Structure formats: C-alpha cells, structure tokens
Amino acid sequence: MANVDFHYPVGRTIRHLDVSPLIEALRFQPDDFDMDRGWLNHAPSRHRFRFDPLGQVTVDANCGCAAMSVKPEQTEELFATYRVWRREYWLPIETNREFASHFAKPNAWVRLFRDVRMAFRRFVRREKPAGLPVDDLADARATPAE
Image 1 (cartoon, one colour):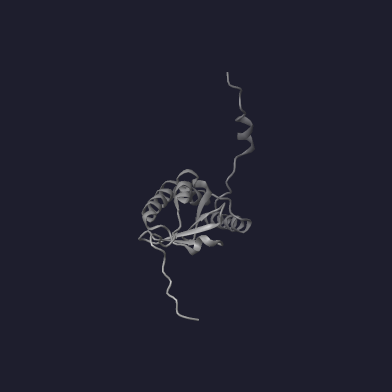
Image 2 (image 1 turned 90 degrees about the horizontal axis):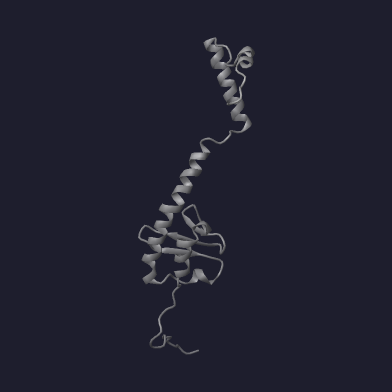
C-alpha cells in the first residue's frame, strides 16, 4: 500500500466537544451533580469531569464523548461556571454534611465505651450518678396554660 498523506479539507477543523449543555446544567440543574475524589459527576449521564488548576478539563465517559476535547473557546466559561457551582452549591452541602456528622448518634460500641468511661470518672470522683429524685418529678406537674 502506498504512503498516503491525510489532510483535512479546506475550511474544516478538528472536531471538539460542545460543552454548552454542561454549562447550562451546572447553572440550572445543580443538584444533578456531585463531587467524588476530585471528579465532578453528572448522575443522569454518568459522565465525570476533572478540572486542573489551570482550568483544563478531562472528560471520562463510557461513550464517545471522552474521545473529544472541549472546545478551547468554552474552556474558560466552563471552568468559571464550575467554580461558581462548587462555591455556591457544593461547599455549603459539604459543610452541612460535615456539621451533621459531628452530632450523629454513635454506634453501640462507642456508646458503651462512653458509658463505661463516665461510670469510671464518677467512681474515681466518688460522685453519685446523675438523676432526679422521684419526689421532684411529682411536684413539677405541668399545669394548663390560661
């Protein structure tokens, strides 16, 4: 077979991935996305996106989308939209989840350990267990509001 040089026809360029639907989804459907180990995940399509510090994006998908690079003129807008999504939507969710985890009910082993630790502290200090006398409860009956 002879050597054949391949050239794109005049007026044609290399095809790039148009990410305008992704930009719109980040703006108007932010709950379709989440973050996992540095990857932006789009749950409905199962596409994943990773942004480097310079704003370049890596697309990971089980379809042909991953074979194409993002349009260079859309890269900056996509990165800016991602940063806004992360700051305005995702970081508050992460903060609230972390805060809630501080108050989650511990498992049975942790509760047992805490009970044993508190009993030991009371024993060392010779304190009586905390509690209310039954007589105090009888006197503190609720009266109806008038």
